[in-house]
Length: 360
Ligand SMILES: NC(=O)c1ccc[n+]([C@@H]2O[C@H](COP(=O)([O-])OP(=O)(O)OC[C@H]3O[C@@H](n4cnc5c(N)ncnc54)[C@H](O)[C@@H]3O)[C@@H](O)[C@H]2O)c1
Image 1 (tube, rainbow, N blue to C red):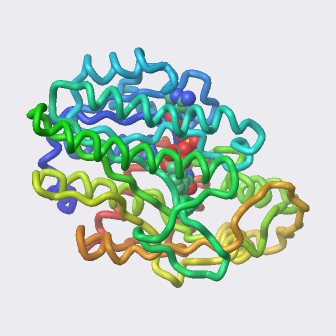
Image 2: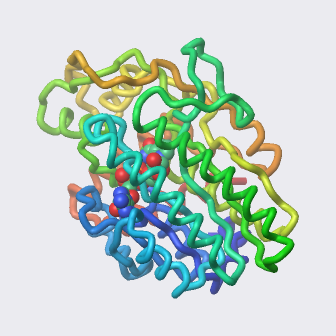
């Protein structure tokens, strides 16, 4: 893939991914593997939504150390023992409803897991940059429909977003501390937060997300139950988000490059309601009779979420590649292909080829 050539700088580099067994971690592992990077993963053994990681046999390209990010010593020995030059920190309680059911776990994982990682990096006697995946939900949201910029005020209204805001504050505090310590430490360490939208793609089997629900409804001829049909979300393919993270990592090759946080969202035409997204998915799957049913939900969620990603465009030259309609087509093709016996890894590679073929 010619367009992956620009990432040749990762060849032979040791790159760590926490949360490598999750949905985004799986796709990023494959992308980075194509660049020749030497990958190491750190993930929770008890995580149950690792089907993509398992069926695509990604442990062979990203060997995993199993442990909890709240276990500082284990996380530290993974970092110190492997000396990664860059870490993508994805390990998190990533599901809004689960975070509301168990807020202590969400804060422990999302805040203290991040603090543990940053403290271990701070102690390391080698260069190490950290890219932390937070979320579009970290912005103080008055529901007026503004597309948030990186400089907007952060605030969380429920445990998931609040724990991610806490992780952002920890990242800023550690970055300041590391800068102060530069006078006594020769090692370069930069901490950057990345805020993506509602990430979708083939192989997302998490029972708390919309794609598996859409597929179940289309396959089973049962109604698709939506808990928040009018909510507006910035939908984007997982390759668009992970490609943005990789472009950021490539810019870190320039020792003078630094930015506190970057948004990676779709074009404004892809800020769609949950119901509109579901209708497009059902149409693309080809079962136009699938009904949409509504469910009263006790889950606290923002109604309108939009991201302004101009800064990523200006600084990195990043832009969305797949529209939401293209993303839906890829997901439908992926899951129908999987049902027909194609291997997960071949389906992922085929999406990757299409993605890099679209980039001019
Ligand atoms: N998927 C999205 O739409 C989306 C959008 C914005 C931001 N994010 C963020 O991106 C990151 C990755 O998201 P995802 O969709 O791949 O999530 P996921 O739920 O699919 O994967 C989570 C990963 O974190 C690991 N993990 C969870 N708790 C852990 C713990 N205590 N110790 C060690 N590892 C632990 C799991 O093993 C798994 O590998 C998360 O930080 C998430 O909050 C996701």
